[in-house]
Length: 178
Image (cartoon, rainbow, N blue to C red; front, side, top):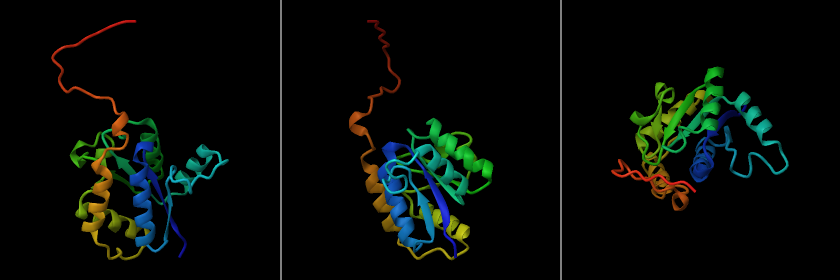
């Protein structure tokens, strides 16, 4: 059986989640999936033209997973990659994490059946969808343990140390110029 290709779209701050998901999918599906993760140091090697590799992977993908956080859903590249898969009419699966609920997905991602990766039920739906792409049964996985593993990666938001502090509903606005 030829390998099916899965493209995982993510922002660089979500690299660890993308890598862990790739690692688990590869092992759980016994290598039947070729998984593209642009930031994993394996998929795009030094010296390769990264945009050509992204283009090739998007054209070859049989399914696309969009890692969705409050930070990523507004990023142009994530939306560009989602649109490329949408136009090819392959499954596009939003995978919510780091506190973003399915009900918070913006248009057009909210038009797609998504999953929450901190939920065992959500991960089972994700595995069911990928098994359908492969035409095989869903592998027997401890989805509770997998969800717990992915929750640990989400406990400390990526880039939290360098995140800009935001004040919700400020009462005073200060403006200054140089």
